[in-house]
Image 1 (cartoon, rainbow, N blue to C red):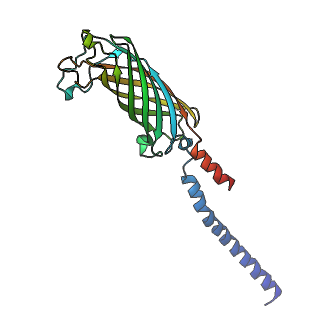
Image 2 (cartoon, rainbow, N blue to C red):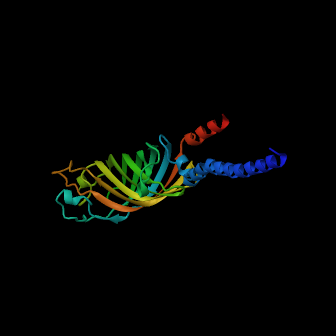
Image 3 (tube, rainbow, N blue to C red):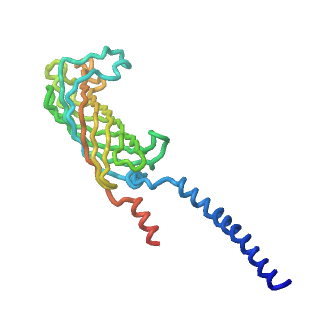
Length: 250
C-alpha cells in the first residue's frame, strides 16, 4: 500500500468514526435529559407538613349567627330555632400532631393532624356567661405543591361545663352544667415559613347535654356559627430540614 492510499484510508475512517461517536454521546445523554424534564420541582410544603410534626395553636372567634341543629333530621326535629339568641366567643389552645406525610390524588392531596384542645368560651349574649371544655379533633390539610395558602376542614368533639340557667327558671336556657360540644369548620392557612402560620375560616359550634337533663329540664342546646382566626407555631426543630442538613454535612 502506497503512502498516499494509507493517508486516504485514514481520513475515511476518521470521517466515519466521528458521527458514530456523536450518536453514542447523544444516546448516553438523552435519558438524563428525559429524567430532568420529567422530574417534579421540589415542594417546600414537605418541610411544613410531615409526619410527627408538633404545633401549638391559639384560635379565637365571634359566633353570633343562630341556626337550627344541622342534624335535626336524625332526631326527628323540625329545624326550629329556640326563643333565645346566643353569641359565643371561644378561645381555644391546641396541640396539633401531624400523623402522616403529604399524599393523595389531585385536590385531595394533603395530610391529617390530630388536635387536643382546651377551650374557654365567653357568652356575651345569652343567659349563661361562660363555658369551658376539653376537645379532641381531626383536620385535613389540602396541600397544593408550593402553595403558601392551604385550605383545610376540621371537626372537634368535647365535653365541658356551663353555668346553666335552665334549673334557675330561665326559659330556653341550658338544662344542666355538664354538656357536650361539637365543632366543625373550614378555612385557609397561610404559612410564612416552616415555623409560623396564621389561619382564618368559618366555624359552627354546638353545645347541649345530650338530653341528660330531661325530663326535669328540657335540652334546648346552642347552635351558632361565625368567623375564627388562629396562629400556629411549630414546636421543636424541623426534622425534615435537620435530616437534609445532616446529609449535606456527610
